[in-house]
Structures are given as C-alpha cells and as structure tokens.
Image (cartoon, rainbow, N blue to C red; front, side, top):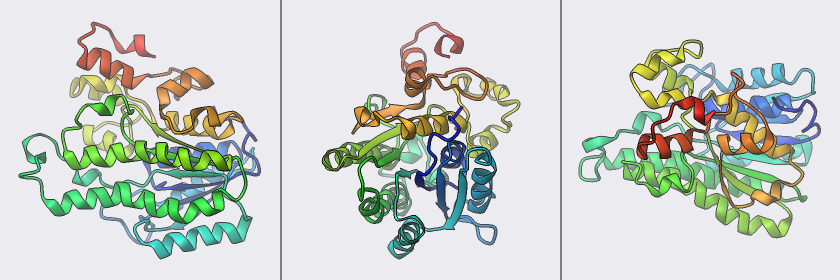
Length: 311
C-alpha cells in the first residue's frame, strides 16, 4: 500500500492514464498525496481509436477519491500526445498552476488493437500503416511528452521520469514475435537509459518499468473474466496464473517516487515483481508475483514449478 502523505506537495503527470497500468499508477500516486495530472484521449464525449469505454475524467475522479486522506488529487486533461501543441499546453498549465513537475510517467500506448502475432505479424504480411501507427503511439508520444515536460521537471533536482513498457531488458532480448511491437516495447528501455545519462548531472533520475502479465481491463475482457474470477482464464492461458493487477505496478511507481535514494536505479530497466521485493509492497491479494522470472524459468525454461513459488 502506498504510504499516506509520502508524496505530499509533489506534482505528477501520468501521460496515458485512461485505463490499465497508467490509471493505477495515477491512483497510487494520489494515495501517497501527490497532485496528479492525468492525460489521455478517451473522454466522456469521445473515444479514441482503441474504442474502450474508460475515460480520463474517471481516472481523475478515482485519483481524487483515493487521495482523500492524504491530500492527493487528480486533474484530468484530455490530451493527444501525438499533437505537440496539446502537450505543450498541458505542461504550460502545470507550470502556471504549480511551477513544478516532480514525477513524469510516460505510459502512453493505445496500440492494443494493432498487435497480432504469428504468421500475420511478419514484415511481409503485416500492414505498413498499422506498424508505423504502433510506433507513433508507443514511441513518438513518449518523445513528444518528454520534450515539453523535461524543462519543467529539471527546474529543480529530485525529478523522476518513469518510462513504461512491456518486458524487462533481459527478457526483451528475445524477439517479441512482431517487429513493430518489438521495437515499440524496447524503445522505452533505451529512452530511460539515455535520459538517465542526460538527467543525472541535473540531479534527476530516469527509469523504465514493466508490469508482469497485467490484468488490465482489456486483457480481462479478452479472456472473458473479471478481476474477481480471473483464475478461470488460466484454463485458456496457463501462464495467466502468474498475472497481476494494475495496482501492483502502481504501487511500484509510488514506491520509486517516494524513495529518497531513487537515483540508485538511474537508467535501469525494472519490474513490478523486482521492486516489490525491495520495497515490501504487495498486490491486492497480499502476494508478490514475479511474472518475468516465472515466464523465463517455467514457461521457457521448462522448470516444474507452480506459480506459488513465484509469489
């Protein structure tokens, strides 16, 4: 659980907070007392190309509700992070309102509907337009956001940039079975490394973080289950046994943001399971799933072990 008040007085921007990991990160930062600007494309008036019903306004309300005891609050700002002027306006608003930005979480994605694997994902068959759109959604958005946000974040030492991806640097040495997806999910790891080099002289830190097998709203719907009965999906995909709720990676980001020695992680690729062991937080069920170690050792390595050994 995020420590109440640990981030009081801090200002965060979670870019791509409409649902899933981004929403949970924003909520946990709010639990810890931060003022959290949440941005995304889907509003109560208009859906993005992903077509899901979750809205950025809902996320803002959830952050404020979660922060009642700590003073945390959510501020929803509909933003398309492929539109530089919209991102500029968002950062300028944060500057006008607070004159500071302490935490930037680059979680923009919105490419789930573009991802396919198998023979259809080969360069010779996968549509070029879809592949380039995936790269724009998952890479260009992060670059645009950092370009405008970093001057404010680096105005004083202690700022933290969190790049969000799928897969650790070690795991992503494996080909991710779709070249565009592989590029999109490896890019944030290199962004965190490069930004870490640039920011360390300014007293700021950049890291990359990945959840494990995430029980996002999208994934639960794909398997026809809910957060309450998610284990029924293990019959379809056995590896789902090591899945985690979005809250888990949300708590990981809140723990990083509250760590006075966060610079020890500068430039590194991190995971929710790894950080749970360091900081002591748990998922909502009280366990500490370590999905990437399970996937490497059991799914790919053939080790005879159940998921309980990785919690």
